[in-house]
Length: 228
Image (tube, rainbow, N blue to C red; front, side, top):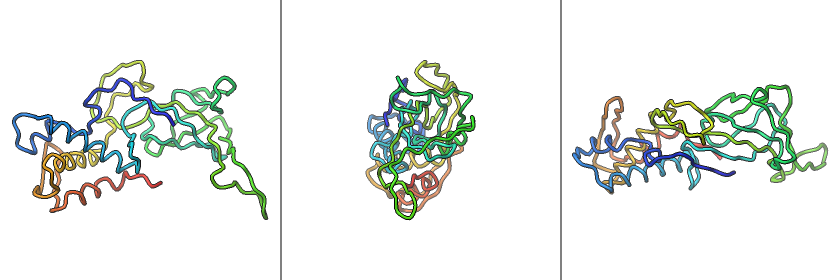
């Protein structure tokens, strides 16, 4: 899998607003420490959700190779899937067949399912063994399907028309629970402690928590955590 972050700004690497962190701290002026804490908190949340030290849930264009399962669906990795740009039946694009946009659709953006609607199947190119019956050998399944797509969460609605983006959608996709978790973790990083704040409220974002912020932060993120 290859990732290509394009047309991003510094704030797109943060899943909460610096102004909200300042308000929670009662600060009248920001500091580099606050900004760094917010960036670090976003990275921490992203890694926690994906079980991956590289995270990879922010808006980006992805070139991913995927194994088929013999069904009409492929499952992609970076969620939500915003739009498919190109899909090939081989990683060798010079020899591959490319599917048209009318052949496929994003069935479930949040789950990453792409459906082949033309009646075919995404072939399962596995190495098969023989016993009482045939079976695919573990760890010997290839990933021949090549997909170029845009995925990932967007915090703020944007009017960006960068030609590198696959999707023209400008709406927010970041869940509010994830934003709350980022704010909690940013406060912890900035203050150097997970204790001492019992509640916070910034506009519609309201939360009460106990003495251990980390527990509540993880609780908020549980519905979004990947199981691998």
